[in-house]
Length: 399
Image (cartoon, rainbow, N blue to C red; front, side, top):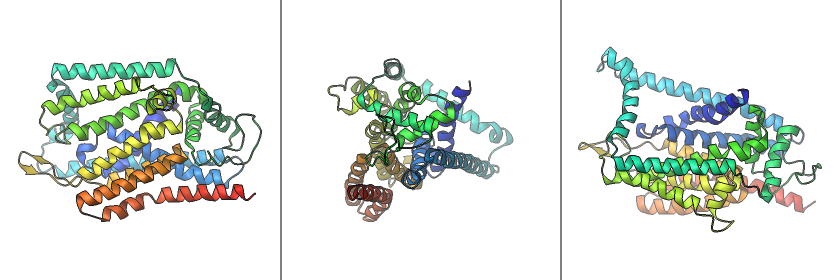
């Protein structure tokens, strides 16, 4: 019971509450649970990287304890801030409607409307669309079952999972060689990729063995998160409107479940080589490089689409709506870049190149070259990360 409560707290409650912060600075139409969960996880991972990487570099003994305490305090404070911001925003929204809403509508209309929108959306689906969503859920359940019940073991587990276990049991990060158990100098190649340390933190706080957490539990977290990213991308590609209530239902509504089915099938049958992204996604789900390729880079593409569409106006019933807010999107873009660093060092170079290409394309399409400087500002954490890596490598070579 204690283990289940700990896992639920750190893998569901904390990310969701933290995600309320960037969601507050986005358009109302995007404040769906899926968006909040994605925003929360990327913000949480970025927060962990900002606090843990300096501890790894500058603290030698018992550094995992220090990093865990810092993250414990900051994550709880951010979760509380997310709840407070959302409660305050809802209170202002309700108070602003007092002159036009009666007591009955004011007290029960919002909750009932939220439930009605979900149930109403299901009722408006055609039977073909319902069957398509059911088929996707079956494919997702099959992948989760195979990932947990038939966990794949590979040579990298001898390093990454053992590093998580060492941090959990010895309270130190990257100072014990996993292959021999002996103390060693700081591992320059892996020291800045602290994703295994986040797994160790969750394992320690939930009292679950790090190996069990990596192989059995993390697939149930990371695989649905990846499909949430695909779902958000599909919404942008196939939905005519951001708002479920306003968009017209037609052929575009049925393309979204077909898109999700296609992505699920590609993941299942993508094991044509041990190096494909699909292979890493389903057999090395808990490893940082798998998270970088399967989750971080698609999330960047999703945010790029949101940034581009943020300049557009959506029209409903002939009346133009306000421009979609992009502050929260820029915040998430910074967090995703930092998350790439805690997953894999090479991912920082990949996302930086992708950011540069996207900045040039957006500047050309929007005829606004300020976006180049904004993208450059977003990449400042990447520059600091690369400089730290180079300084560490130079210091090692000069010994």
